[in-house]
Every structure is written in structure tokens, then in C-alpha cells.
Length: 189
Image (tube, rainbow, N blue to C red):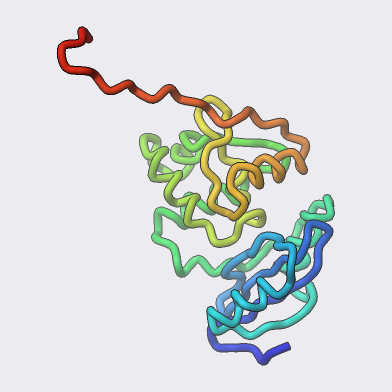
């Protein structure tokens, strides 16, 4: 266990899904690291970032993540450090943070609630910059047709699907949009 750093502390703990961590700084919760099979991977990540390392889920963020992964609801209000995000990203992520467990919303719905109803793609980029997946539940945001699209929280769409199924949601498979065929010279449109 290393001393706390000015950059923050990674609290590493074992969950029923594997090893996980939350990173806390002076302004609150900064990051959530999704479960990894080995603790050493999280320790190495913390060291690369110059973070202190503490063992165990002895913080509100770690306890909330542990409760979620164990299938228990957590009503804790978490102090999240939003300083790495733009004002628009903050609005988007605060809307996402209020999506109830077991429910999904579309990128367009989030865009409208964040005050930019035509900005679904910008919402997708903002959600993709979420540093606190699960606790700011970006996995609950789906495509306009209800299909799984995009997940940058680690583990890709398979993790997004696993998280939604953990909440009792049966998500649609990722949409398979047909790719436009390139036109050949001399062919008719």
C-alpha cells in the first residue's frame, strides 16, 4: 500500500466481478476502473498515473461500486470531480447520472434533457468521455432504435450488455447498418 498522492488515490478492491478500483482526488471521485482479472493490472495503472494506492472499499465511491457489482442498490450521493469535463459534458453526465437502474434512454433523449435536442452525436462523445462508468451509468444510454451502440467504459459492447443484463434489461443487439456500396463507373444510381 503506497501513500496518498496529490494526484489522488486509487482504492483497489476485490468484487464478485474481479478486481476494481475508484480513483479519488481532493475534489471527489475522479475515475472508476472496471473489474480486471488481476489486481496487478490496476496497481500498475495507478503507478503509471502517479497515484497513491489503498486497499479496500473504504470510501463512498468504492462502496457504491461494490454494492452495484453485488446487485444491491446504493442510494449514496457521490461527490464527483467534474473538473476534467467541459460544461456541456457536465450537463450530459449529470442527466445520465439520473437514469434509473433497469431503464435505458436514447442519446437523443439525453441531448434534449441537456438542453441541446439536436446534439445526439455530441452527447455520444460526451458520454464516451465519462470517467466514472457504472456510477455515472453511461451503459444505460442506447441508440435511437434501442440498440446497443458504443461503450468506452472498458470491455466494449459486451460489457455494456452485461451491465444492462445485470440490471434486468434485455438490450437489443448492436444495429447492423448496411454500409453504402461504392458506385462503379458506368453503373446506374
